[in-house]
Image (cartoon, rainbow, N blue to C red; front, side):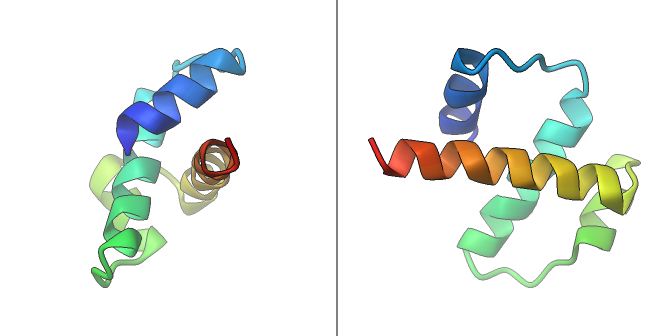
Length: 71
């Protein structure tokens, strides 16, 4: 999953300055995909992020995953 997000984001010109946020977003989405109960608050705390920052990167990662599905 990470490689898909990375490839699409890199092609779109996104930088990866906030590596923790990208990692947390993919971690959260991976858990959701595998039906593992988790919360944004728990993942944000694990990575030392705010829930709003995590949510921003989850939305970005979701966009790139959806773009890949449409190819």
